[in-house]
Image (cartoon, rainbow, N blue to C red):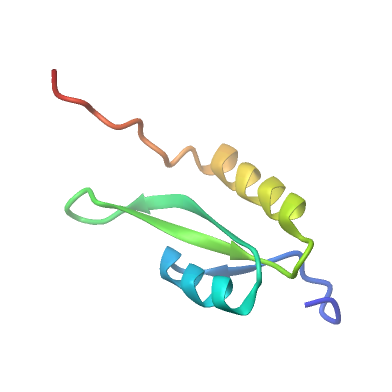
Amino acid sequence: MKELRLDAIVAPDSSSATVLVIAGFPGIAVPAGYDEEGAPFAITFCGLKGYEPRLIEIAYGFEQATKVRKPPMFKQ
């Protein structure tokens, strides 16, 4: 990643978090959309050790740019 000057790699879902944790790399999953049935799905931004602050910035920027997240609806 350093050689290619990448801040993060994007994985298409949050299931890659398991591999990241085992390898000791940080990652952050953020809402990315909803499928045909309305179920939410996420993407994961992955980085190198020590990149946690940058990953949080990237995830926050993605959330603000896309506004994908919908607050949950609770039944009373």
